[in-house]
Image (cartoon, rainbow, N blue to C red; front, side, top):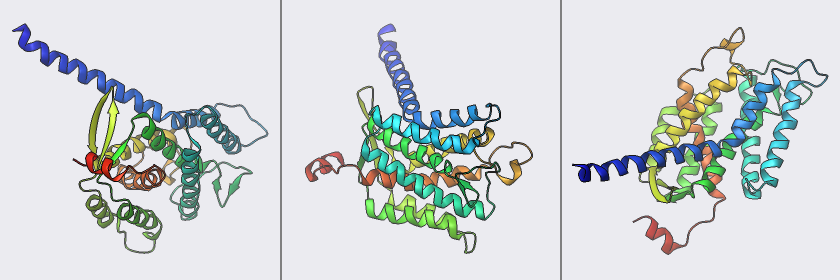
Length: 271
């Protein structure tokens, strides 16, 4: 009886340890985001200062970026991806804030059209997560279609602007994203084991945790939705779907900067 149960017990123990290792790796990948949100939360506790809180957070975000680069936690290539995420995020913020989707109610010097420059670091944190996860888990794409995925991701980004004036194509674009990523998987390493996950599933899982992070970010005052101006309320669950789509943009940017495997290696990986 013991001999029959031993392999099963060993399997459970090994799986549990692998799950813990995966969770710890994900936490490490979120280091920039955790540090940034901690800084946002801590800034609400500061006494009255001659410098606006949003402006202090810009300096804090720059220092965080330099620290991660100088410590070697992020490469120069990663910093470039993160910078692009910052710019794309700021463009997104400018349109959404102008349309009243959400707001940054506090004053600041480093603020343009209602958007503080630190707002871009919230998107940079997502870029940092993807880049660090790539290194920490030794990510490898199998049967990835870079051009088709990039086109759909770009269309998703544009739709988040145009749906204010044109019909919302979110659901058709979600179907297209599923189509172009069908058969695409992400291979990653946890405790020496090489595992695989469908790329579309990874978008959904990341989107869920970004939705949780957004709830935390609004709770500590990173920004405010109109219904949160007079007291915090949970972020609507529809944002979960929005993040699951938006993460494709960050992923495409990060994937474009990774060296491609040789043809023979790629063929072997797809088997």
